[in-house]
Amino acid sequence: MRAFNKNETDTPAETPAAVPGTVSPRTRTAKPSRRRGDQAAHLITMLFAASIILLTAWLFFELYANALPTREKFGWHFLEGTTWDPVALEFGALPFIYGTLVTSALALLIGVPLGVGAAMFLAELAPPRLSDGLAFIIELLAAVPSVIYGLLAIFTLVPFVRDYLAPLLRTTLGFLPIFQGPAYGLSFLAGGIILAIMVLPFIISISREVLLSVPREQREASLALGATRWETAWQVVIPYARTGIIGSIFLALARALGETMAVTMVIGNDPRIKASLFAPGYSIAAVIANEFSEATSAMHTSALIELGFVLFCITILVNAVARVLISTMNSRNSAA
Amino acid sequence: MISYRSRRKAINIIMFTLTGICTFIAIAVLFFILGYLVWQGGHALSWNFFTKLPAPVGETGGGFANSILGSAKLLLLAALIGIPIGFLAGVYLAEFSGTKPAFVVRYTADLLNGVPSIVMGIFAYAIIVLPMGHFSTLAGGIALGVMMVPIALRSTEEFLRSVPNSLREGALALGATKWKAVATVVVPAALPGITTGLMLALARVAGETAPLLFTAFGNQFWSPGWNQPTASLPTTIYQYAISPYEEWHQEAWAAGLVLLLLVLATNIAGRFILRRQIHTSRG
Image (tube, rainbow over all chains, first blue to last red; front, side, top):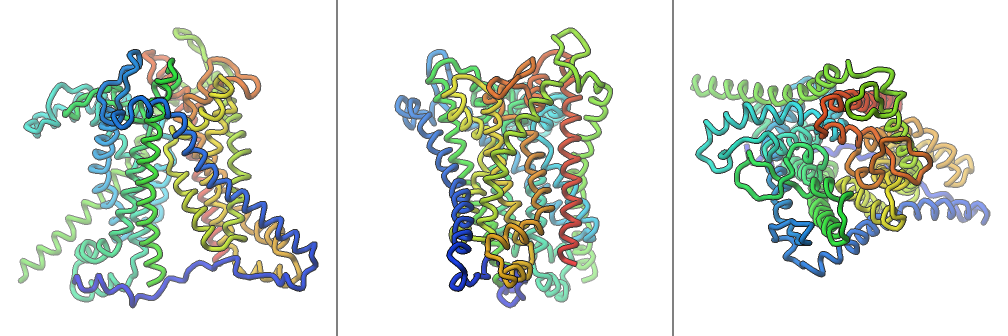
């Protein structure tokens, strides 16, 4: 079975989209004035395209420059300090970095199996019409504003975690330190769950598309050898689509890391590092959202901007990896 | 042998049932959100909601009129910034550029699209609020506008690329210069798709809260002009949701319902138009 996975080169190419811009007008015979019109249009649109690169660079620069006071005072210790005290001008980012990482990890832990499972159902089992309809609904889920997720989470998820989920986890898995301690509803756990729900549509819709782009011959060969549909999906289709699926997971991770509102509303906003998932915590985005407009000292603002800068760098990195993985997958499929 | 086969068949059924449950959970979430908001927000919704200013705590009959107007103004600004840049850059990528510059711009736009919205807020704060010394509608609009740029760019490029090459060749063969062919033939052909894409981009930034918290800030009253802090639907929902007052929670539900319906309606309408567009261009 495995040998077939490597057999990617003999699949017919999907017709690549027609490449525009290949038609070149015969500027040789055109009058100079007509050529000038083309040149002007080219130049103007190019300037706007270039402005996007400039904009991104400017964004980077503003974050970098405005965080300078913090970097000068704390240097790399900013990242490992555990005290966040705006009054004493003592700024350490570790509790926030910890909170962001814990909630994002939880989100992936819950979201990836659910998301990839649903994508497999939609791509491998559901009839195309049903699959398209359900995918449409799932894409709507991605359009729901995050403040609405937060609103619902405060009033439904938080009480649920406090009254049912946390006691249940404590009695069944309480020997693990992460499931010990008193259960506040506002917690890492609630933050992780709401993030999982929010990244789910991204994982599902991208993974589904990646799975659908796996050539039909791969499936047919496996089925012809007597494999069941599940074996085909699990041992042939998933390995073939692995790169793209991992890409979708990275994309989801980037979203989870940067998600602000929903997490701010349920994480509890307590800048302490606790092993228990039932304890309230804090995330990078949440502390920026809560304290930025109330920051009184320049150092406080600059520390928050430095946090934003850290978040920016992490998400850019994760996004870059995701894009490379997804485009590798796509180009392999169309070049095969 | 038989038992081995039936075991494999059983695994097949069990695993696909599990994936079906995964799908069900994902779908159920949407209906839960919609149902819960309708249930909680439906009865709090009244005419006052659209026409009145927020009432002080303890009084009933307040509305979200200033938030609605504030959101509209912010979206107008966002559209004025995001659409021209995104659209023209998209035209460049699809019609004028070579593959290498196109790749660089597209990649940068994707990265920009991935920047957390709260960081966009910091950017707008740094370039507008800090020099001007106060929060303003302008700053909020710019934050949302920058967020729109990559989305507008990608949808413009995508729909221009879906225009058949024969249309371009036809226009050029008739003696049109390239920019004329683009402006009078290619762009009009792709316009329904592009417009829909831009509507979806607007719907996406309409629900953004994080970049507005310290740019547009919030306001209990009307915000005349562009230079003062303004309320907006998402930030007011946030403010009301985390407040300790029961009546504010009610109003947050109502506002959440309105915002969700607006966003979902735009998305559903947009996607239907897009689907028809794709069918006609293929057929």
